[in-house]
Length: 201
Image (cartoon, rainbow, N blue to C red; front, side, top):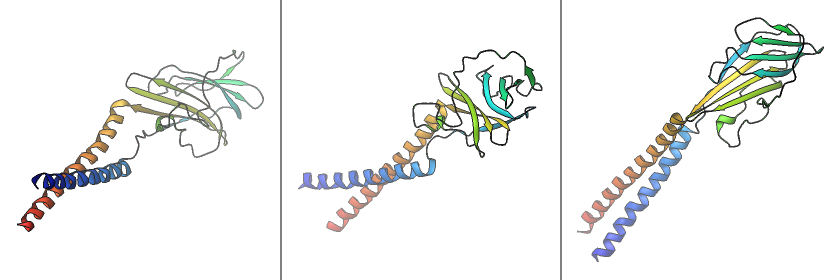
């Protein structure tokens, strides 16, 4: 009889712990969502002519700040221009070199192989004509930099960074919701068991 009562009590607590743990998991996912680091937008000085494409980007650092990168563009009439970001005016490139362009079309395609928000295209509000992007994979963080040419002729660079510690913090908060749900389930289960025993006397 005692063994049967123990099994019933264990089943009640186990069921409620699993049920409320599942509720906590759902609530945590809906309230916190996936780790999605914000983008930062930088407006680039307007080029002297109407631009047809981004020819090349010479990346000078792997930091969040794109200052000092050299942006090369080609105009509609075939002229090439370069600009040291946020440091100087546009310059004419009279003998454009042949670039080994390994940059991706970050305005139209994801940079990485997973479904993580780190690889999302930037939230550009206008239509993208051309883009060039790169990401820096560090031991505990990833930095994404995306240069875009928009349909109104303007140029922008979008940057965001994902940190492993921030991502772990998000996952920990979700687990915390599950733990709280399990604890509430156990507490409610114990209350129900005590009530059953009191009634059965």
